[in-house]
Image (cartoon, rainbow, N blue to C red; front, side):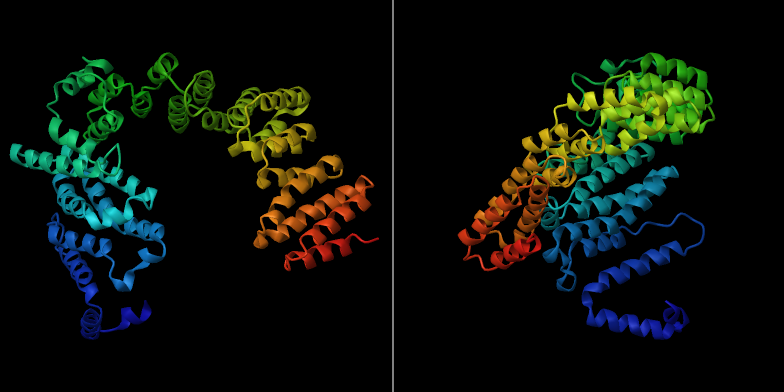
Length: 495
């Protein structure tokens, strides 16, 4: 950095020319950077967006030459890196939209989106990474807002409609919910769409907004409009549209931002559908210095069905504890555990329950025992039972799920208390590894057998254990990697 800064412009120019001559694949990128720098250096006027420069920048990212063939080594990382570079261009477009300049945003988005349809890159990338799905969806949303912000002629709108329809069709071969659906709807409908007009006047219900069933992107379509209305300070239209579209979180949060707090609380009590909507309102109330109202709405949200209960309950638990509201905090702590049982949630409840802990403990463990424990959460549930020293419940989980990740912490915890069960469980883990000759996992076998040996010592059955290990050694004497490991293990337990 220091050397570059101190070098005179003429020398830098020569270095740059040499670089481009030896690495011709850098030409497009260098030229595009120079053009961008030139347009940014033209004083305070809005820079002319050089579409060709953007096109070349995108082409440079999407078509790695031999010198940049990271894709061959790790396709996932290559796509992630591509997306991060392209996001810088998308952020420029987003900044323009947020400043109310839809035209500039479209001048950036047009070449960006067009080059993104590069078939070779799409075919290589689309299956490699979630990042690519998310990036396309972001482009779609920013594009929709740009189209709703820009003042376009009929012919420009028609051009966009035709282009977006083509892109959406192409993307349909990759996913059932293709990107550009939201932007296409924005280009087709504009602001003249009668149901949206009526909704903004407060003269429409959810059923009126769509002819028949709402499309899969209905919520994104409305949120794009709300973002534009918000920037244009069209508050009543924003509220009317949010209410008509049943976007309760957007509606109540905007009421709070506008200082209409009692109205928001009243509306929330009657209209919140789900814990995550309640959390949005509770957070907004807390940010606007109404902490007790926030707790109230949080408690109300816990009684609702729908998504987000664990997150709401945890938020309410921590807020109530910090505000010295122990009863609310304990109620929320129990709800957190029951929504998503983890050891951390159990311990947090233990801390808050104080003298009530024996009763609350019974409640938590009963709720956990009655759950239908699945493979994905088996280890997590077992950890709680082990911490609570409810060994039989933990063992029951280990008996149902033979996955070593589930069984391992249980045998480690119970080998002294339940030695006979431990010996059997360890044998069940060790034997398949030996039978299948998984030599890279022999050390795991030895660890299982060692735990079984410790349990056998407690159960006063060390002779039986030793005979078992000797039999294994003799039966599999041809497994030259395994034999010395078993010899060493027997040595360790020799008296």
